[in-house]
Length: 96
Image (cartoon, rainbow, N blue to C red; front, side):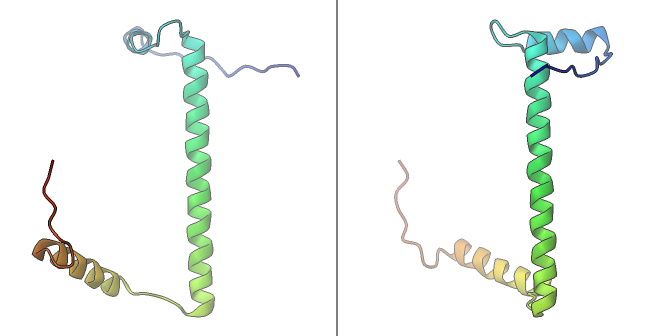
């Protein structure tokens, strides 16, 4: 399989120096750029999947009329917070 290239990116000399200053031992600028692009692609793929799951969940809730209101969620979180502040339900363990 033939390899392909990613377009060159023009940057200020100061930024290039900053990037070069964080390279690992024996790491080239090209390796760093490739790893960065791969990580960014993966992050965007995961984000797109997360959004798609959320939209499917929303659609399913609409179909089933199975919603929890924001007020109900906030009230539940407030109860948990109040309980945690009061120490309810948790035995105290000494910190090490």
